[in-house]
Image (cartoon, rainbow, N blue to C red; front, side):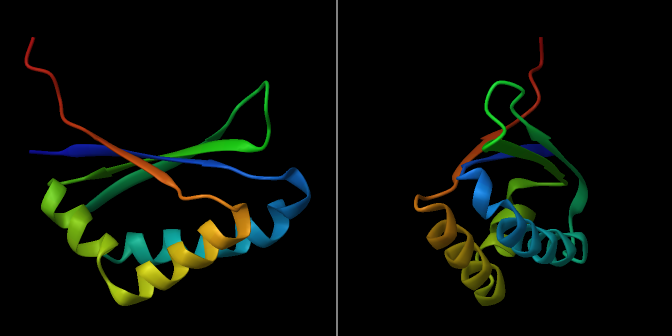
Length: 97
């Protein structure tokens, strides 16, 4: 069953350039992963230092396998270090109503 993963990050705007470089690397890695379907990034209109990435995966297992790769863990650790807090991940499944 396809899932949508929402990754939420809050950062200082003066660090955006460094963050974007890391996020682009993470995105390119995800796009090569089996089960990856799509992604989109959004910034909060009221707070440009808050962004979410919504990615779609064929199954939650595909996303977990990608997230658990050493290369992805290292990139994510650099991102979290740069923003000063852990990225929040929420996984959503389609409703049947």
